[in-house]
Length: 237
Image (cartoon, rainbow, N blue to C red; front, side, top):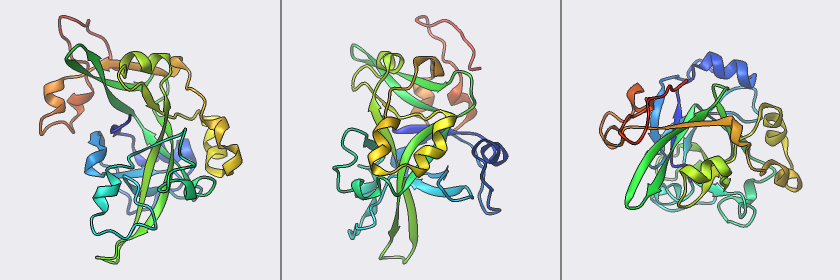
């Protein structure tokens, strides 16, 4: 599953790639490593002509509980196999589709009792375009309107099965030619977007597990390859 993500692109680069305007109030502070369980703000692409900002962790519009984090922590990802069945998601399919730009995400490989963290990034392009859904929620305590999203996932392809070898899941990635069609897709069209992403789009390397768990996890160093006696030195790019 995708619970940690990265987005370090400048607003101007997102604007060029997705052909969206950038509202003046949108910040572009890089997120080198962001845990979904902190419900970070993310720059998101919708049908709107402008880039949006939403929180990761979908809060359904019907939610009336006091602690929205209780449900948001369970909706960071949405399984493509059941997205049309789950109460939190089914009303959004064919209506509220989005793209979550990503410069890479983080997953663990299991080797016996050891969990080895990897940074998975595009092999050639600068960004992944992750398929997502979003909703609008009114916080009854504050009167604040929130926009939140969930990342769609599928069974892992061969490349990701080797890395995320316990649960064997991965985010659904869309190639550039499928971005606008996904945003406009009707409910009866969504299955065509849930195909396995080709292995050749991915590259990955191990990262420093101690840094990942430290207060400095959101720093450029987290993206560098961590060299041990098991792995040879390589390049991020």
